[in-house]
Length: 179
Image (cartoon, rainbow, N blue to C red; front, side, top):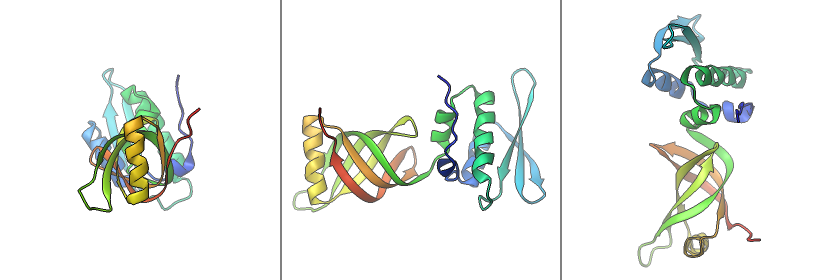
């Protein structure tokens, strides 16, 4: 199944410099700045086809999400990867998002009110490791979820640090209702 990413809110979260780093890492060549508004990147396919991507200098314009959608569509064609896989590599911050998953680790030092929790959940269609710091009541729920293998939901802001997401400004950590 082929998925086309059209969520303007999600597409607007892609930072221009993250796109530039991604392109450089994946063999694209920066050809220069176009009218001070976008960097032009080129890459040749194995068959010698020339592909071009525009990397906006800033995301402060109305159709930024549309430009990012076109970019992901072009990357899908060149890289022969799904748009969700590419988007997952480009997303660095998700604000006010709910993630569902399973707790895979709980750590709390004796006497501490805050514990560190690791969960596995789907972020933009890709299974990701997510780190959380939870206080007493939520930590008790996380420990129960871990012991009884109950899925959880967690709302808040999530920031990518390295290859995983870290929960920031967490809200609504809860056990999912069992059927």
